[in-house]
Length: 67
Image (cartoon, rainbow, N blue to C red; front, side):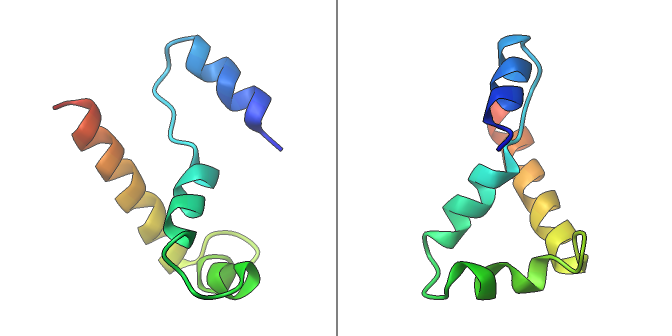
């Protein structure tokens, strides 16, 4: 739903972490259905597990971009 916005930001040269892609990549390794997979990450907003996942995704992005 936010693909156009993410692409617009990327074209401006801003570093972008597409969290939809991060969750999609993580989901590839799951044997759960999408709703069950996402349940621990959201409680109307990010849960502590969702915040930790976001932080790990950002950390990996920052490390790999600066290599």
